[in-house]
Length: 177
Image (cartoon, rainbow, N blue to C red; front, side, top):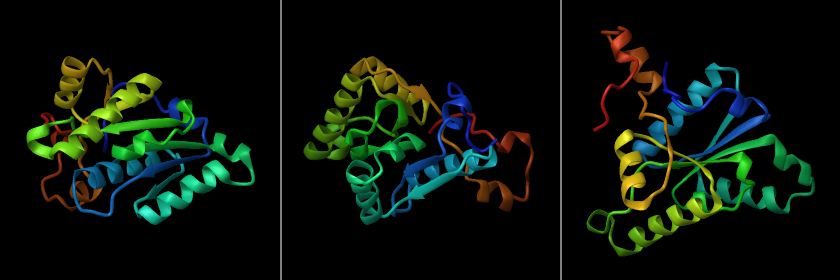
């Protein structure tokens, strides 16, 4: 399929009316990953909505916490990444994506501390967390003792549809780079 859900089941999403996925406006790994996860969920008849604009994310968070109907909170499954993992959504309705790990040499001091803080907050909250590769999973587990479920990095549906050489081997990425 498009994204391989190794440890998650469709029943993890079916109890919710809508899956909200926080994305990024920038072209890159998280945007590609979020789009393919959304296409996978939609192909299983799960209503998904991607929010990629910071203004729209802020408006969703504000209405989630300060909206008139408090019972609307139970209808959303929210998939977050990065700093958005720190937003205190209901634990059972939040799924945190980790697409990397803290590295002082790669990210600089501020982003290193922020990513480290995110890991410890998710670990403390015992949030349901996923990593996009077995490599990230093993670093988070070995270095930070943080257990995540693995959903392998996926291939966007548009790449598969536009490919001239489609066979079953092209559907799943065998290795993580």
